Image (cartoon, rainbow, N blue to C red; front, side):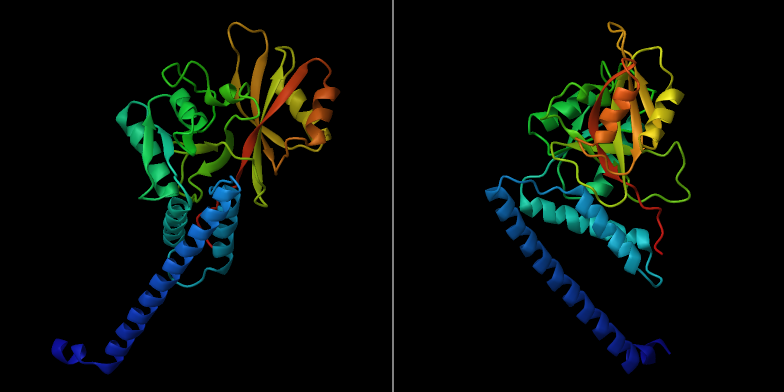
Length: 298
């Protein structure tokens, strides 16, 4: 029976069709990489950068909208992440610095996130502190830095101060938050699963569905609830992500996640500071990231 099926014309025809599809996919991949190489040459002349996470998120969402059939959508996304990473590699030098703390399990989790997002062929530069990641990006040794999700659980082992607080004093050339890792989450993703943020020295861009990160400096006298209510009145929907108080200063810094893309010169931020007088003294826009997908296609 097995011998007769080997000669089955229908099976031979199906296998030939699969071979043809494989060849077509391979041809299109080579064509895509060639186009990426030309884009890299154009950006090099204009002193631009190849990494555009907002554009990548738009690609992922477009794929989600058109995906159908039994092929697992998360697998499709993983394939495209590899394709995008390969394109970045031919557009110019692309290295990612990754925070790899102890214990080893935590460090490996951040490496796995970086590898899944930035591809199996992208060079990863390991740093044992958050400051080391920021330094690699600032000095040009890495195009992107992968750091832990901002929270109140900062430890001195990570760095003397939280990475997001460091960015508040970085000036116009500071790295900015540009992506959230992983891009695709699932219903099984728990609060203990590894997540990270990516920073890069590029301008933030709107993807169409974003979350912005704004750091506010305030006095100790004002509550989070009051700031939130005034923010809503100013047209900003926010949730608190982290707080940091430098022992040598009386001011308190609070990191907020705000719904939507908030530009550097968004007048709502200035209106919020003015509405609270001297209790909210200033703000720093730390960037934004595209809202992650939920692991399913429509």
